Length: 132
Length: 141
Image (cartoon, rainbow over all chains, first blue to last red; front, side):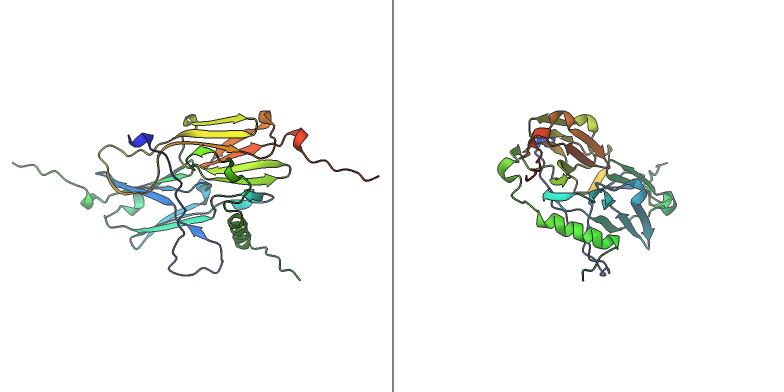
């Protein structure tokens, strides 16, 4: 049973940047699920610790970019004793292949999970053809 | 002369380095007796008290159980990932399944004062140190 399987910790992958940043802080890749329904492409990203007001989603030249800024001010005055994971901002980009209606992209953030709905443009939707 | 960093990005970098320095430190040693190491836990000291921060994105609060007994905390639950019917999956990276983890904090806790908060996919456990366990300063006569 898939639901009975024990969860393992996934190591956070670091973003491999194409260009270097001027600040040395590390940026992490949010884990992502991508699936397609007849009407839309759906992208689900896990960004624990990111508030919805600090999420930036944009599509430029067919590249979807998602950025999440972590509010780490809560970590002030905290002294680490034992750690198993690191924290940082999140960033990830995907090149879109399907034709997406960019004006209708929807985004919802809940419990650190960002769900994006990218509706397919009309010409990319499957059509049934009636045989007369 | 010390250079002070006012830039928040440097603050983040310093925080990341501080977290790295305590990766799998000796503090909890073998006391993360558990069935599997999920979810990952960071433990901090906040004044006299202990704060455990656990990354658990996308959990239904009703399916998350936290039990405390003396200085032992057990976190268990189920993480579910749903796809719509008829969806074709292109990428699947998010984990789902059951988890059950117990940690023993090597200081005495006040079990009635333990508080849990789940926000933005992060579970924070406030673990107050028992009054009897707090260090006392001794005056020299």
